[in-house]
Image 1 (cartoon, rainbow, N blue to C red):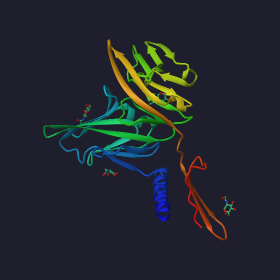
Image 2: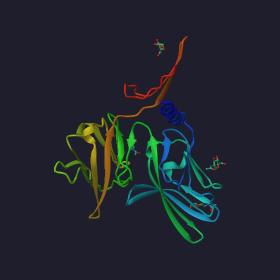
Image 3: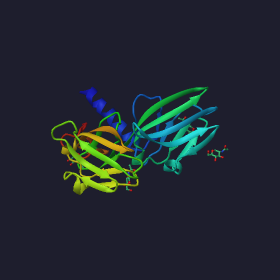
Image 4: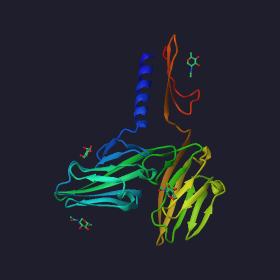
Length: 274
Ligand SMILES: *[C@@H]1O[C@H](CO)[C@@H](O)[C@H](O)[C@H]1NC(C)=O
Ligand SMILES: *[C@@H]1O[C@H](CO)[C@@H](O)[C@H](O)[C@H]1NC(C)=O
Ligand SMILES: *[C@@H]1O[C@H](CO)[C@@H](O)[C@H](O)[C@H]1NC(C)=O
Ligand SMILES: *[C@@H]1O[C@H](CO)[C@@H](O)[C@H](O)[C@H]1NC(C)=O
């Protein structure tokens, strides 16, 4: 019992630290995904120093689509517009500091690094915590969307002459075409028609009021010059986990510490101490 209580306290403290906006440092050689909090600072250590090295950092849209974010060559850096005004690159320690993390920073980053005639490529998954979820096709993990909330699905970068089709559970008998764009003509399935919108400026489909029925495997077919590129995303819709609230209740006879993950329901965990 003591041990469980201690474990709960430790998890709660970790959650609190995250909620308090502690600066995160992620490294390109870490095995786990990098967790960043919406609106906070994130340090991405790309290499340990940048002397006589060349590196290029990309954001992946899916396995065949990427966007350059930062290039460093001969101690000279070039940043993409997308990030220019809210980040700083520290040449000395090869660290990119993003001052204000946005939802769009979620995704898989690719680092290409040239050093003494050798080339290395590394991926890093960055997750942004917040209730609205962004998921990318071909991301390694399933997409966990929050029940009743919004899901952002960036699908393509270039929306000129766009021809794409989004299927749900493509290989099952209940397969449906959820969404389709053919040049500028959009077709949506009835299930998302009144609660979704496609933005041409960033190729993103936003679905609101996610329900459990939206769970499934989504398959994107994107046609470019007659070639069909396909990518996949497993979506799981779950009850949202909110922020942590700590209640300390002192009365004359004893102290109550209650700790729960909001929304506070009977299945939220709580600690009572007397
Ligand atoms: C750095 O690179 C940019 C773009 O490639 C170029 O315009 C600029 O002159 C370079 N600066 C130096 C100091 O080399
Ligand atoms: C890199 O240097 C900057 C500026 O000195 C510092 O704020 C940051 O913490 C350093 N990051 C790492 C990962 O060492
Ligand atoms: C795409 O654009 C819409 C409308 O401007 C915006 O609400 C959304 O956050 C953008 N999505 C991404 C992933 O940047
Ligand atoms: C604090 O604890 C007392 C005694 O258990 C209880 O009567 C009271 O309602 C609690 N107050 C709050 C705000 O939880």
